[in-house]
Image (cartoon, rainbow, N blue to C red):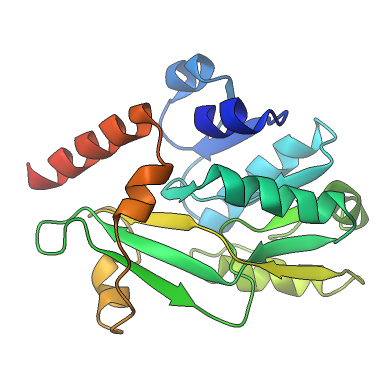
Length: 213
């Protein structure tokens, strides 16, 4: 988020929810940390959304802890809802492997839908839902649950293109191999590396090293 804040000039308040005490690193990066068990995941996401509502934001973007979005993509998504769309999101997502067998491989999945990762929703739309998108306990299909909730009210949608990378490690519930087996197109990995800040590149190297140990 430091990169996006610095490069875009947008006033971004970040809320992170999780079970480990990350308050020190969160404070370092001006992030609001909300302690809550990681499972059920839907409850964790809803907790973060409820906390975000207290800041009366004009819009909210949903990202997982392994998602990295380019600055241009984040700005473009924000601009679509600023200009009037209720919801905006991406029709493609990239998966990057940190694991030894496929390390450094970048593949792309495209669908004729808006993916949950990177989806941005206007604050006034969330007001109509009392800021509740996830109303049941679940560890998967979170976007389907959120979309079902959104479908209870009238809203406009914008499907955009951009770059959002899901960095896959041993800790992911949905492993890289799950997508790699689908023979998705491989993309030049430098497109991912080039969008990162120097600090992010260093952190990525640490993550890769931890997969080897």
